[in-house]
Length: 479
Image (tube, rainbow, N blue to C red):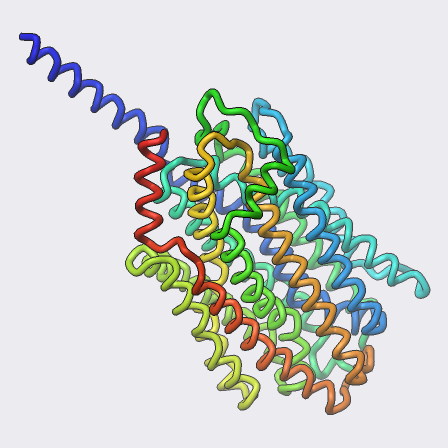
């Protein structure tokens, strides 16, 4: 009887442990979808600024290329500098009834919307336009950081299960690509009339200014709606990774530990170069279509083709990384864009442009999905090496965004300065031949070089599928 009782007790304990753990780690489709919708407005607004802010500053606001480069670089650098600062304050935030991260996202949303709207408003004066756009772009970058850092870190507070987090990340990336598509569609279709060839002599009319403000208002309303869905549909868990006896580590000590973690440095460096390449293509693509490829009347549809291809590709890459591993997926997906970038610059006609757009969407999807899918694995690896540390998630995410934003700011500033040296004529219908040559370099050669550099660094990334599975088993035993 004693052996029988022992077997019954052991079996009951095992079943209870299984069901409790399963209930604690599993996520419903509704929760994943609401989580994903919450990240969409970041990409909606980011897509609009990435594709159109540069040409807006040059041709609608009509500030000179040097001042435009300063706005883009200083704004991005300011946003990057805010990431570790926001990460510090997020890591110090106390638990509330709606969570530790959720108050940040809900509280900053109205201010993000207002700052974003005035970023696309042409002030009724000329001499102070540079200060106006620099001020509102920096303000917008600060506020969007207050949303993005806690939202990114929220991935680690949804579930302890790597598979569930990867699934939630796939939902998020699908919705963010959809958000990028929606942002480009809203902005592109509404403001297309301001850049059409037949409209060229009428640059900077009141109609051109108004269409940008209308687009900003629509995107702002969408931002509020998606934040409401996030708040209503996602339940944040209070640090499910730490032992009950663990105490939060000081921020500077945590930062020191994070910056010494090899896998994090290698992953961040690799995707830093890759994100610079993607950002360079995004920011110069409309200018390239307008002044270097005679595709002025098609750019908005080409952009939509790229993003629709990326949207459809996300489920494929999610399957691919599960089947062949994340590192292999990164190499196959991101290197795919290289021949097509060269082809677009070499043969800039409408048929080739649409073919390149369709193919390039695969690489865009991989570049969006892979870093956010691999970063939780790096955090798990860090947790295994430092089992009694707590509260470091915001540091990982904020500094990853810091490095990529800063590099993107440098690339934006440098590319706009290159246009200045090439003789870019603000508001003109035609540009000097040197401008077309520089745009071809910024769309073709430069991104290819950055992508190759990123993929070379990724060779050193040590977390293979075998290491990831071993870490998962070790963390389960630790917990």
